[in-house]
Length: 70
Image 1 (tube, one colour):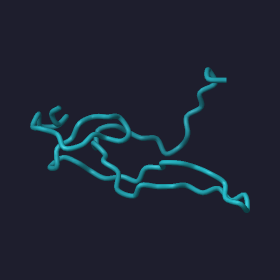
Image 2 (cartoon, helix red, strand yellow; image 1 turned 45 degrees about the horizontal axis):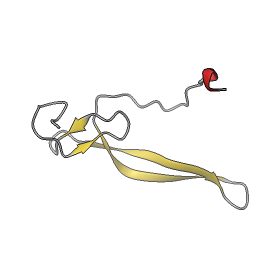
Image 3 (cartoon, helix red, strand yellow; image 1 turned 45 degrees about the vertical axis):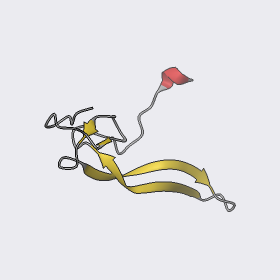
Image 4 (cartoon, helix red, strand yellow; image 1 turned 180 degrees about the vertical axis):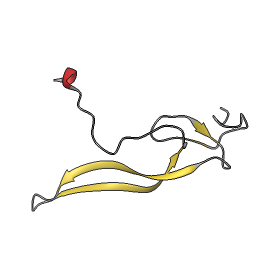
């Protein structure tokens, strides 16, 4: 697979959209792996601090409603 930006061999894929990226074009962004409530009922998140990011896609900060999945 080749890099989305430069067509050279890729070294990873964006966690958000799957685009391939090489070492020169890779960026990093936090990624939530899982959400849960602890024993006291507090919401917690397991986060990967430096996940591979292509720099092209636009991950949303706010959740997107999907009523069709009800």
